[in-house]
Length: 257
Image (cartoon, rainbow, N blue to C red; front, side, top):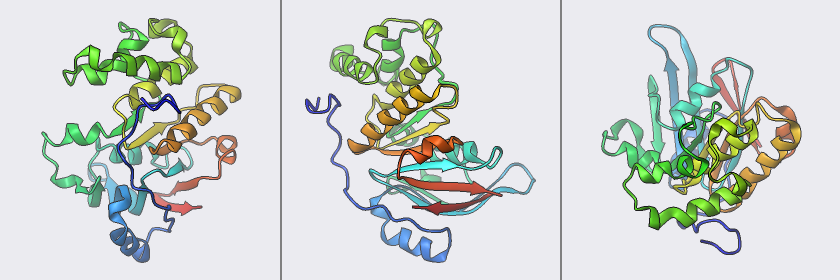
């Protein structure tokens, strides 16, 4: 554990400034030159469902190590589809997605689990198992990998305390408030110390004070070296941080400092 932050020590991250650009040819060449600094890189990515029109098109951007960004856009713009491609749950119709330096289209079924462990995801509906306690839910990713509890127990407890749920360690999700469930889901997404955290509308069902508290958690996490992407339509939340914005509209992506 890192005694200064109460957070497990991380893999040594590449420290680099963010590069912001509009989608296009110049952005793609810049992405190629800087690819080793990116956690995830999209090049000319498009997505369509069945035989319908493209719902996302010509997406070219990078998520840098240690970067912080909001993904926003009107309802139905494709934020969830883009998030699903970011955590490799959805394949693009065309284009190239590179994750941690590897072409996602070439990953085998045996490769995928190890890559996905380095991508933490906080789902909008939490996806906590009601028959498990907070501790058991957070520890689950380690249990399914066959880790011995003695090797992770204290890290799980420390992480649960870090998100402010120390008093709810043995509580079932059934008795947790919406905000508590959200923080438990965040802890579960972080227990494997991912290189990047993706959060889908993490403040959508909480009041403004709790939304600010969750945002502070994400910012503190980012300072430890984890890249963060928050999908949100909450303008007030975005105004609180001078962060990069990925704006989806009509299937296209614009990027602003």
